[in-house]
Length: 474
Ligand SMILES: [Fe+2]
Image 1 (spheres, rainbow, N blue to C red):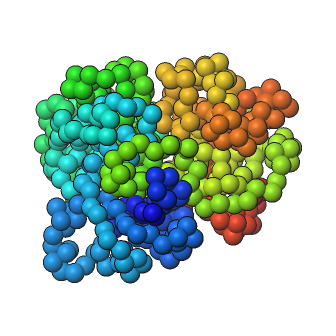
Image 2: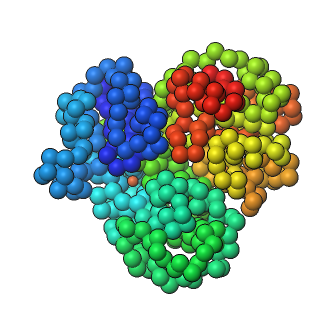
Image 3: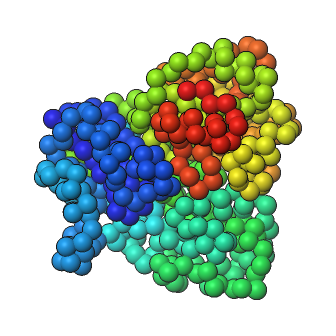
C-alpha cells in the first residue's frame, strides 16, 4: 500500500512516500519549484512522487478543523489544493503530534522524552511527551499566544532579517554582538514566567521595538542568549517530567545548533530528526497513522542524480582549485546539504570563506560548516556526542587557527560527522582527501545561492555551474 504524507499550505511544503512501512521518498516542494520555502505543492514534486505509484491514502500533518475552520467554510485552502493532485481519503493528525511522531518513530529509542518547540501549529507551541512502545502521551503543553518560535522569529525580523526563514542568520550574528546592551530590555518588555511564557503576542512581530537600539548584532546576541536560557529551562523541566536517558527534540527550534548541545547536560542520548521543522512532518503524519518505528536509513530521500564522476577526479579538482560542487545520489531531505548537493572546499585556506560567501552572495560574517570522517571528530572538536551526522550542534574546534574557513568567531563549528554506512561516497571522498592532504575534513555548504533552494536535478547543476563559474561534479 502506498501512503503519502503531506505538510503544506503554511511554509516549506513537503511530501513523503511510503510503500507499506518503508519510507522511500521525501522532499521539500521548493527543490522542484525553485522557490525557497515554497508553501505549495507543485507538479514537479507530485509527478516525481507518482513514479512510485498511485497513493491510496494521504496523511496530513495537522488538524485543519482546529486550525482553519473559516477556510473550510469558505471552500478555500488545503483540501482543494491536495484534491487537485490526488483524490483519495485524507487523515488528519495534530501538528505537534506529527512533529513528535516524526522524531520518535524515526529514532532508535523504544522509550524516551519528546520535546517539540516551534512557532505554532493549531494552538500548541511547546509540548513534552512520554513515548513508550507505540504510544506517545502528552505530559505538558504551552499554547498560543505564548510561543518561543514566534518570539524568535519576531526578533529575527527586528534584526532586519526575514522571519520564518532567516532565524539561522540571527544565530550566526549573535556571536558578534554584546548581549548586555539589550538583554534586560528584552526580559523587561517580553519575557514572562518559566518555562516559555511571554508578555506579548508576537504574531505580528515587534519590528518597531526600541528603535533607539541600533546595533542588530547586539539584539541578536541578547536574543540567542535568552533563547538558550529558555531552552535550558524547557529541557530541564522535560527531564523531571519524563524519566528517561533518551531525548527526541523536534520543531523548528530544534534547528538552533548553538543551543542544542545544552540537551546533553540532561539526557545521555539525543535524536533530532534531520528535518525537525514542518517539512519533517510530511513523514510524521504517516508515522502518526502507522504508530510504529521505521528503519531510518538517513536523509538521502529526494531526487536521484546518477553518479558518473569518481572521487579521484573530485579530489584532484579540490587540490588544484580549492573548491567545487558535488551533486550526486539522492538529494537530502531537510535544510542541510550533507554531501549530495554540496559545495565542498579546503577548510585550511584562509581565503576560502570570503570566496564562498561571495559566490553564495552571503554576508561575510556568516560561518561555514565542516564535514569530517567520524573517527577524527573527537581529535578536532569538543564533541558532546560520538557522531553528529546532520549538523545539529555547534561545538568548539580544538585547532581553530588551522581551519579558518570552518570556524566561527566564537571558535565553534557546526560539525557534520560521516561514516561509511551513512554516506559511503562522501566518506570515501574524505578518506582520499585525507590520504592526499593529511586533512580529514572539508568545508561543506549547500549548493545554492542566498534566497534560493539547493540545486535538485541535473539541469539545476548545469545552470549553477554556468552562472557561478564553479565546477559542479554531477
Ligand atoms: Fe511546527
